[in-house]
Amino acid sequence: MEKAYRKLIVWQRADNLAYEIYLKTQNFPREEIYGITSQMRRAALSVAINIVEGTGRQGKKELKRFISIALGSIAEVEYLLAFSLKIGYLKKDIYEKLENLRQETGNFLWRFYVSL
Image (cartoon, rainbow, N blue to C red; front, side, top):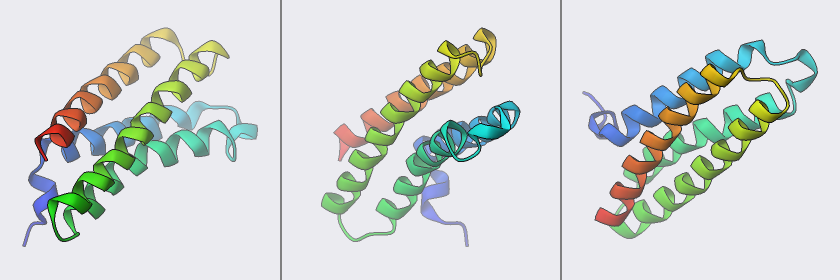
């Protein structure tokens, strides 16, 4: 039986964002494994995880709370992407791809939040 969250476009976008961030941060400097790399990965995963956890709870009020947390995480990803570009860990084209994914995910997330 497929889990209900897997049908949500917002979760699909968040899952894709986390996946792409995992792939693109593999090339970050080794000394950042416990720094920016870990922080960005955790923030990106947090978006998808909070959608999953929220849909697993009872009632819209709890779901909305978890989506609110996911919105905070997507903002964290925004900053970490920009900072990674600034210090040269991301090339501009990779940054733009990830930032576009982040914006798209954030837009879906916001619309989902407002709909609750």
